[in-house]
Each structure stands twice: as C-alpha cells, then as structure tokens.
Image 1 (cartoon, helix red, strand yellow):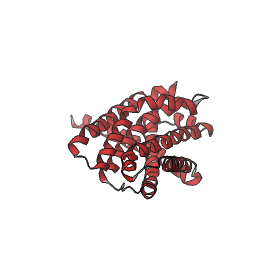
Image 2 (cartoon, rainbow, N blue to C red):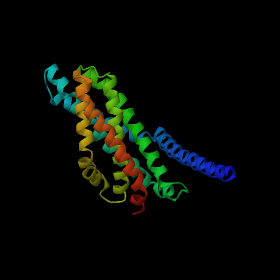
Image 3 (cartoon, rainbow, N blue to C red):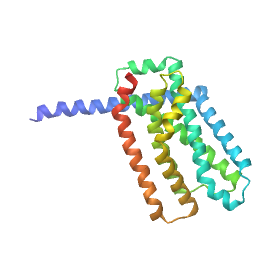
Length: 239
C-alpha cells in the first residue's frame, strides 16, 4: 500500500510546486517589466495625484468636514487609478503579443490569473503607500492607522480579484478602455461600500464591534470572488 501512496504524493507535490513556480514567474515577469519601463506605476500615480489635487482644491471645507470625507476621497482615488492600471496591465501584454505566449505556455491557466492578480495587487499597494503620506500632508489628516491599512489591503485584494478577471475579458475587444469600467464598477459596489464604511470607522475611532460587519463583508467578498475567478478564468481566456 505504501508503494502506491508515495508516487501519488510525489505527483501532487510536484504539481503544487510547478503551479507556484508558474505564479512566481508571471509575477516576476510583470515586476521586472515594470521596473524597466515604469509605465504602469507612473500612469497610476499621476492619475491618483491628479484626483487628490482636484479634490483638495474643489473641497474647500473645514478640517472636521475634510476628515469625514477622507475615506470616500481615498477610495475614489484608488478605484480610478486601479482601473487605469488593470486596463494597461493586460493591454500591454496584448499589444506586445505576450498574452498569446502566456496562454500557450504549458502551465495551468489559473497560475496566469493568480500571477497577474498578485502583480496588480502589488502595484495598487505601491500607489497607496505613496498616496497616503501625500494625502495626509495636503488634508492634514493622520492616515497612519493599522485598521485603515488592513482595510486597504482587503479592499484592494477584492478589487484586483474581480478586476483581473474582467480585464482578461475586456482586453480581447476593441473598446476595452470603455468596457472594463462598465463591467467592473457594478460588481465592486459591495467591496467599495464596505471599504469606505470600514475606513471611515477606523479614522473616526468608532468601536471595532461596529466596524466588524464591514470587515466581514470584505473578507467574504474576497474569498467568494477569488474562488469564482479561479474556476472561470480558463474559460474566459479561451473565448
């Protein structure tokens, strides 16, 4: 019995190693390409800064009111910049002919999805790490809050999980720049509402018991939509 069990375990272990290696390869490819070109981060960062400056001059409010709108302004910035990043991420692959090469690689298609999603998440968090201190200076609001960082990570993961899947659908069309926001924004309403409410709760010092339902919604959203994307990504890229 032991002789039959060990080979199966070896095959499973080898398959898991190869799957993780494929994910690492896709992530490293995207990061290395971005380090050379700096196209994606630059575009997202410029767009995020533009949104922040527009809100800063448009909302000439007293400090208390500015603190109340901080969560909404932050997530509007992240969502708009993230949409631009998702669009450009797969569009560059398509325009350079790399996407077909990825799909022809002898690896599980879901490894490509997870690799692209992780890379997109890294880009979003890098932009957030730059935006937060600049926003704090402009609006005179302390954003160095552990709870807020947790919400940004959870919200960004849910946003990227759905966005990477939908951008793979939209990239095959001629109107991909218009189609992705149309597909994405209705789907991310739950994660956006939960992220704004939870972020505002942490910034206003609301007890954790009142913020907990929004954190739970973020976690459930992340798990469900990551699982859905895992199951359907292969069929999406085949169409």
